[in-house]
Structures are given as C-alpha cells and as structure tokens.
Length: 267
Image (cartoon, rainbow, N blue to C red; front, side):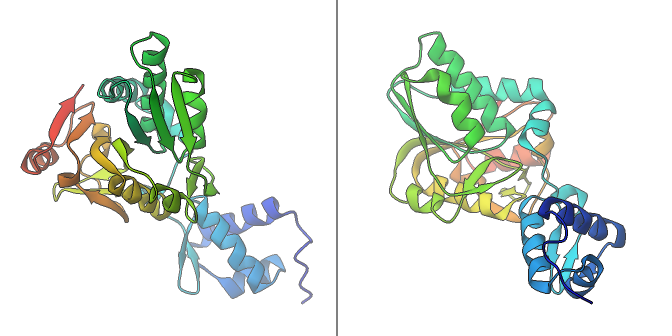
C-alpha cells in the first residue's frame, strides 16, 4: 500500500484516529497507520498530539481511550460547571491577597475565577501594586483590565490546548528564577491521604515549580475535587497554608486538611 501523509488534512486525520481509538478500545500504531494510509512516524506524532489534547492515552505499542475520570475538559466548559461555587472560591482566595504583594496564579477554571475576583478588587480600588505571574493565557487575559494597578507576567513555555496553559520546556525554568509571596494553585484531586493531584502531567510539573517558588500557598478546589486522586502529583496538604473550597467537602479530606495543619476556608 502506498503511504501518503498528505492525503488528508491533519485535523481530519487526527479526528479519524481518535474515533478509531474510541471505537476499538485499543489500537496498535501499525494498525492505525495501515487503516489511515500514513506512516508509522505520522501516527506516533498524531497520537502524541491527541494525548496532549486529552483525547486518549498512549500505551506501549499504541493508544487507548482515557478513563472518564482522567479526561480533561476545555477550561471554558469547566468554568460553566459549579460556576457559583467557583466564583465564591475566587472571591475568598482573592481576599487573601494584599496590596504590594506578588502572587503566582496557575491555570484552570477555579484559578480563572480567582483572576476575575482580583480584577473586581482592583476595579473597586482596594487592591493595587500587585504582581501576578501566571502560566495561563486565559488567566492573563482575565487580569488585563487590572493593568496598571497590576503587573501581569506570563511565564512563557509550550502551549497546551484545552487549558490554554504554558508548560515545559521554559515555564519551570522561568519559575526557578523567581520567589513570590503567595502561590494560588488549583488541582483536580485532594484525597484523604493528603495528596494533591492533577490530571495532566505537564501542568502538575509546573504547579510543583510554583510551590517551590512561593513563601505561602493557597489551594483552591471545589468540593467535587475532594476524595479524587489523579496521576500527576502536585504536592501534599502539608505544603499549603490555606485550602479554599465550596460545596460539601468529603469529611475524610476535611480531617486530612486539619491533620496537615492547613486552614480550611469553606465558602
């Protein structure tokens, strides 16, 4: 069979490949190449791109669908879920920020709610001279109306879709040169063992760098994240001084927060 990697537009080819994985449950690289009429090298590149988009999971020899609990949603869709809870968390977390301070703010729908609440404080005149460093393009754009009261710094890095996040290479290198007053960090899971985790490994890596670059740390997570555990470890509850949540948190995780010495702020 003749291989023609240009026969289909890239987006169409990748959509067909994702559909194949979803239909079969597992597909070998060689079988996918034969089915699509492209090279094995092209299939490997497509699978890498689809994994970065949260469409599937690479495994030895091929790919399989992501388990439902491990699937990322676009930040715009996530922001619509439990929006009132996230707004409440955003307002509470923004209330912990003092004028003249520096903060790290990461990506995700809850962090985005924090950004909007920070802008509201700046607009009302009770927050100024704040330096906000972020690895999220959506976060940076949300903060733009607060300039010049705020200085907004973007880390740079490799752009990930879905969350519009900037990750390694480059992102953690920039963070290694900084030290800020407070890091406000979101997550996908907080469990009773005190583990704070994230679905996406590249973003978890940047979040760990943010922890290392800050004096105090605030974890923002709605109650649906309590009791969940994911692949990418961010850190432990002992590394956070405050946990801001909303909803009905898992009692076992509430106990773990207290045991870790962190303050729970439930709004």
